[in-house]
Image (cartoon, rainbow, N blue to C red; front, side):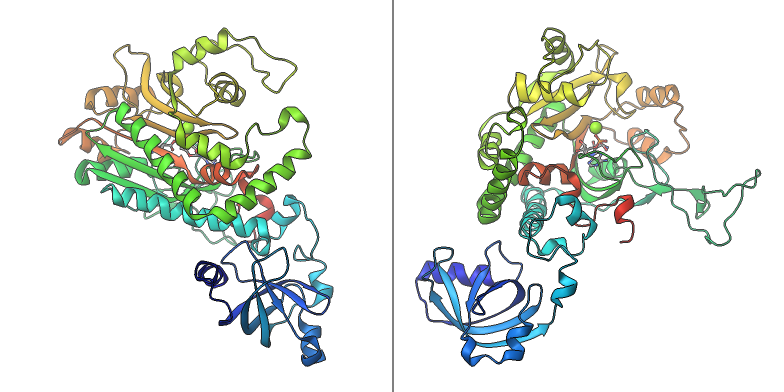
Length: 480
Ligand code: 4AD
Ligand code: MG
């Protein structure tokens, strides 16, 4: 691996070692300098070939995109771009890449727009930007598990195909398992998409929370980290139809404990990637700076990517009740000239993204945890406060992202939970197993869900959520 070997050489200063590498050609200049990348690092390794002693056929086949196997000696480089290079002693072409065909793809060495790269999601990982984003994503996944395992949480896998709608928002994709050529019809002769799964109507899960709750009330502290699905308007830069969610759930923990956990967890994973993805983050920071320069002044980021990550690490998140937030919004003057063109809200309304952005980016200039939301705009399972109007919900809002976490203390009182379900017309028979947990040893418990892609967006500075997941599920990417 290029990264490990180059780091070792630079550490020990022991050049002149024999080394071999297999990777893909990024560029080939002057019939002499190959830039090779094996995916381990943002830094290409320069391979210097002795073209007089390399046969013409091989030289012709060293083309952008080709897979090659290079052997040689690692040397200190005289060039300014890199510290180490390889003086090639042998080179094998493992897989050709026809330049005429490469020209038609995003592998061709010129700047392609992110939209264009999305059309070739299977090749875009060979670009610097996607290589960096996906390596950071992978390290973030590791940090997620590492945080929870170190803190004695148990990892549980919750169903993907499920009969319940955890959020009660009706945003589920139905699971169909019928013969598409001969689909079942309803009484009107139309295709009946509500096909059963072992005799039950099912959908793809929107959240593993309800099942995770049952496990927390037995294992104490658990977390899920799996794919979730939402059949909602995913045509924004913050929504995906298929995304990954991290959902811890903790018994004997109230909303304050839940906020502490979320903040501690987020800071841990940020620190982990700052410590372990230095080169990639520096590359992504430079990339964001270049993108910013092309934007109008008002839309540019106020901080560099690395400063922003360090800022979140070093400062406490502001904890503000929903009611206080509404007062702040009501007392602020709408700024029609700039992007914060919010309207003054009345208590009870759900906050729109411009309100969230105002609070985070203009008013507090910090990540914000909003808590105690009106019961009417939140899900059925949230703990009702003594005022009878608000619930122990919390959303964490991040600069440039908006909501990154949604969570709550759960309603542990059977009678209150049943009354709420009745009010919302949720069938008790459908959730009998969930209600059992409130019958047998119920207790205060809390949890939250963090949208993994929104976290990756924040860390990498990528503007569109489709650029932080390997295969975004959109109509244009339906072939995967
Ligand atoms: O706020 P949400 O809907 O909360 C839940 O699903 C709870 N059951 C979580 C829990 O308490 N265990 O979703 C949680 C987070 C959001 O804050 C957001 O970061 C992310 O999931 N999210 C999405 N990310 C990408 N695309 C979408 N369509 C998303 N919908 C939610
Ligand atoms: Mg939410």
